[in-house]
Length: 295
Image (cartoon, rainbow, N blue to C red; front, side, top):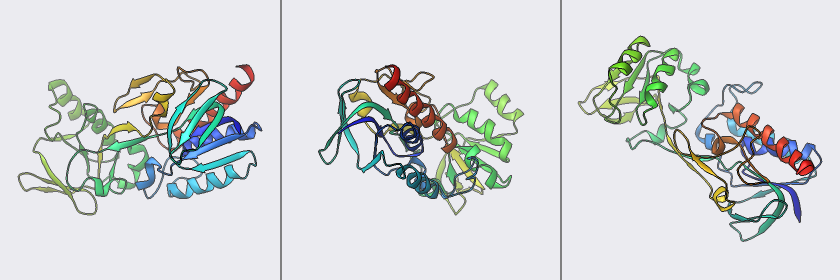
């Protein structure tokens, strides 16, 4: 079957894109591997009408609503390769099946690579976070740590300071200059230069190499990101370098450098959360539909 559009990735951005296309009464296929980026988080915040709801619950409701449209087909599996051009794209899944579509929307997402600190990964999404807008309020103005992993960790510490007394653990990764130290000081951020030995406790407390343990309400860090699929490269899409890793280059309508291919969500933006992913997907889906009309 030749679908009007194939959406690669069934997370929040992908489902939002597929919904727009389905409501335009076009046939749409969603290929999903089931690996949402925020699957480690117990609750999602900052999304109107669903603030504080487990992200898996939001995703389940969204999927059920999407599949209520008879022109939507959902395939569970990973897209492993792609080719073709506008009107004749082909996406092959890991089971060897090839799916054909006139347009493609890439919502493939990214995976996070955390600093190599013992105890950090086990607390990811529970007491260790990357987005204060998603998780900062729940820390109740307690002491918050920022574990340096990237030059932008300084910026992260300055922002996080609105959610509680903040300690920046430089951990040998960054060495703030005089101007940065002054800027951090204006935000009342404490700089701790002793290296981190491990993350301990239920609330991501920090044990330093000198034996001190610093109790925290929560810990933030900037993970490196990698795209979870090579499909964008297979199709010839331009890939740019974002702040934390590669991103698919798109214009304001979410169109990639390849005619007929659109991209949305974390794989095509510098940062994201549920609300931004849904908005991103809505734009990509509408743009993909209109390209079917206007070429």
